[in-house]
Length: 261
Ligand code: IPE
Ligand code: IPE
Ligand code: MG
Image (cartoon, rainbow, N blue to C red; front, side, top):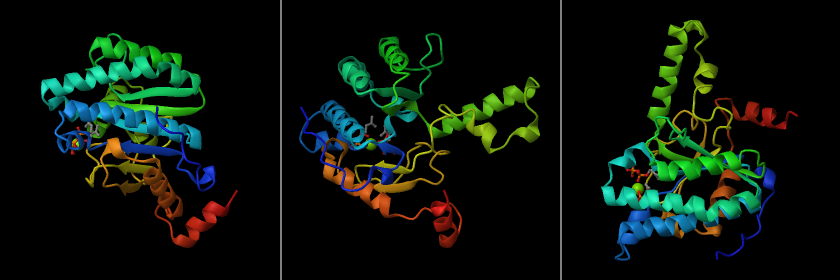
C-alpha cells in the first residue's frame, strides 16, 4: 500500500483546477532494470493509484491521465495486450476505492457505447463503461482517462460533427466559432487543463489535448512515471502556483482581472 499524501504546503485554492498528465517513461523505466516493458506498465499502474490518491486528498477538482494514445495502437501486439489487461485489472481492482472516494470516472477518446466506434476490446470497454456510469454522480474529483485518445482525432471528429450539422441544416456556417467547436469535443463540460505535466524528460505534447491546452502551463519532469514521488509532484504544483498566467493580456490587466470578484 502506498503511503498517505504529504500535506499540501500551500492553500488548496492555488492548486490547478485541472491537472492533466502525460504519464510517460514506463517502458524505459523497465528496460533500465532489465525488465520487460509490461513490468513498467504494471509499475505505472501503481503510480496511477498513488497519484489519484494524493490528488484526491489534496482536493484537486479534475485530474486527466493520458493512458493510451490513438498512436499507441501501433505498438507490438504483446505490449498492447498487456496494457489492455492492466486497464481491465485497474477497473476491477480500483472500483471500490473510486466509489468510496466519490471519484467520478470519465473517458475521452474511445467511444464506450456498446455498438460505438471504439477500439477497446469489449472485455475492457464493458467494465469501464459500467464504472463510468456507476460513478457519474460522484462529486469528489473527476478522473478522466484519455484512452485511445488523440488530439487531432478529436478535432477531426469535431469538424465532422460540425459538417454533418451544417449539411443537415441544424447549424449555419457563420455559427461555427470557438464555442461550436468546443461543444463537439469529447468532454465539452470539462474545464481546460491549467497545468499539463509530462514525466520522462520528453518535452512534447504527443497529440494530447491540443485544443484544450491552448493556455495551459507546461511542466516537464525528468523522472519516469513509475518513480514520480509526491514531493516531485508537489514541487511542480508549487511552481504552477507561482506562475503568472496572462491569457494574452498585459501583466497589469491580468492582475486586475484576478483581483476582480
Ligand atoms: C507511457 O510509457 C505509457 C504509454 C504510452 C502507454 P511508455 O510506454 O511510452 O514508456 P517509454 O516512453 O517507452 O519509456
Ligand atoms: C504519450 O506517450 C502517450 C501516453 C503517455 C499514453 P508516447 O510515449 O506514446 O509518446 P511519444 O511516442 O514519445 O511521443
Ligand atoms: Mg513514451
